[in-house]
Image (cartoon, rainbow over all chains, first blue to last red; front, side, top):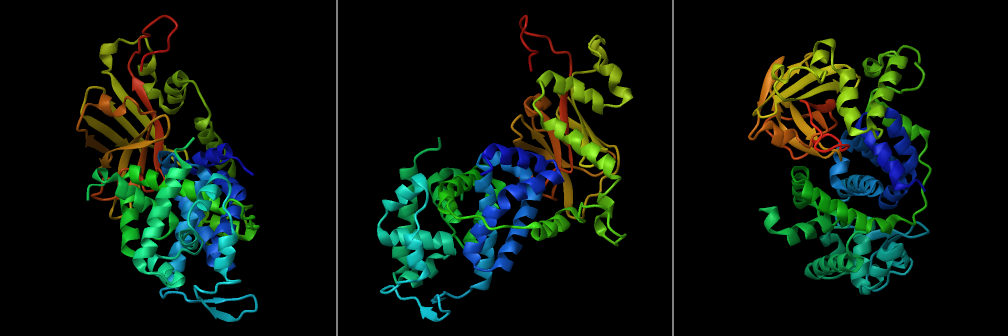
Length: 189
Length: 272
C-alpha cells in the first residue's frame, strides 16, 4: 500500500501542475477510489465517470490540500464520495424501497425481514481497527443507520423509509452515533 | 450565522456532511461555507478521516489505462503520449517542444526539494532575476540606494516570467508589473496570495488589470510578507475575497527580502 508520505509528495507536485505526478497519483490511488465509488453506485460506467471528475478536481485543487491538514487518501476519498453522492441523489429522487436479490428478483424493503438483503450484508461488515470497535459499541439499529448512510448515501428521509422508523428517531440516531464515534475515537495521534 | 459562535453545530454539520446525510440546500450551503472558511473545511476533512476506515478493507478494482487516458485528455487537453498524426486538438498549445517542457518540469520540481533557506532567498532568486536587478543583490551596496523591500518574480506554469511583485518593507502598497499581458477570463480577476513554509495561503487582494498596477494593504508590508516564502496568483471571481485559492496558481514564485540581514549572534543564521 502506497504510504501517506508518497501521496503527499505527489500531491504537492500536482499542485505545481506536474502531469507525471498526477499520473503517479492515479496509479497509487485510483484502484481503491474506484472500489469505494463502485460500491456506492453499483455501476462501473458511472463509477469511472466519478473517478474522472475526482482526478480533474484534484488537478485543479491540489493547492488547497495543505491547508486542510488531513491525510491524502482521506481527502481523495472525500472528493470521490461527494461526487458519487451527487450522482446518487440525481438519479434517485424518490425513496428507494426496492432492491434486487441474487436472482435478480425485485424485493421490497421490509424492516421485519431483511434476510439476504444488502442491509444484512452491510450489518455483517465490520470496519477496520479503532473505528470498527467504536461502531461495535453502538446499538444495532443506529449502527445500521450509520452504515446505510455511509455506503448507500441515504438521506434522513430515505433512512426513515428504509428502516421503517420515524424521521426524528433516525435523525437522533445519526446525530448521537456520530458524536459517540467521535468520543470513542478520541483526538488524532 | 456566525460559525465561530457555534462550533458544536458546525462540527455536527461537518460530521453529517462527511457521512452523507446532509443533502439538498443544506449540503450546498455547507459546501459554500467550506470554501470560504478553512476551519470549516478542516472540520469536514477531520470527519472524513474518522470515517475513512469504513472503506479500508475493500479490495481495489483495477482502474486501467483507458480511464487514465480519458482523465489525461480532460486535464491536459491532449494525451501526453508520443505526438500522433496531426490532429485539430485544442491541447496542442500546451505542448511546446517536449525537451523544453521537461526542462521546465524538472526546474519546478527542484523548488520542492528541501533547500537551506539562505540558498532559497539568494541563490534561486538570482536565477530568476534579470541582469538589471543583479547589482542590487550584491550585499556591499550602499543600503540607501534601495529601500528595504519585498520582491517576488513569479512565473507561469510553463516557466515564462509573468509578474514582478514588490513592496516597500514599511509600505502599504504592493506594486505589480505584468511582464507579459495575462489572459484573464471575463468575470474573473487575478488574485494575490502569500504562501508560508507549509504552503498555506493567505489572501492579499485582487490585482487590477494593466501592465503596472497596485494592491493596497491594510497594514505594513512587513506584517503581510514576513512569513511568506512564496507568492502565488490564482484566478478568482470578481468581487469575492476567498479564504483559499479556488484553483491552481497561474503564477507562482519565491518572495525575497531585499535588505541586508545582519546575523544576531556569531554562528546563528540570519534573522528573518
